[in-house]
Length: 178
Image 1 (cartoon, helix red, strand yellow):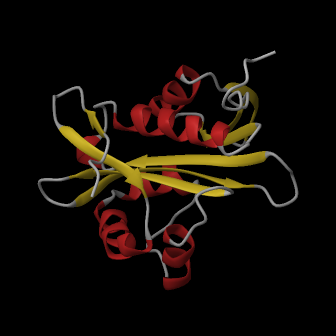
Image 2: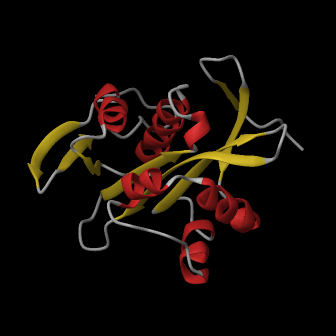
């Protein structure tokens, strides 16, 4: 068994970061239940009181290429405290939609930034050329994370900001970039 990568919050707490797995189904359900109504609304851009069985399957049983999700886990409690994910757009080749959420008590500690930065690198490695994201215009922390990673605003409508990030594929092994 190999060591899982960790990230350290601004408060010095080490969290394990790893791809989500089907075995995370209950952990994810519990993490979702612990989110405030506002955090749920900001993540899904609509009221979302619960995740049903089909949604939990969709969110945990993924291929890790066209659909990827990374979780930050508090190893002292074995709790998911953050999730960053992208899912490819079926009708737009090379484009994926990105979203992230951090447990309320862990917000403001850099978890979202660290998870999302790792997810962006995985997207590029998996051949995603363009990431899109949407967030409420008044969700300044999410906009700051996305802008800090290079996302640019495409438009604003009905209180939602649409953003995008163009990615470069990493050079193939043994080849230098052109």
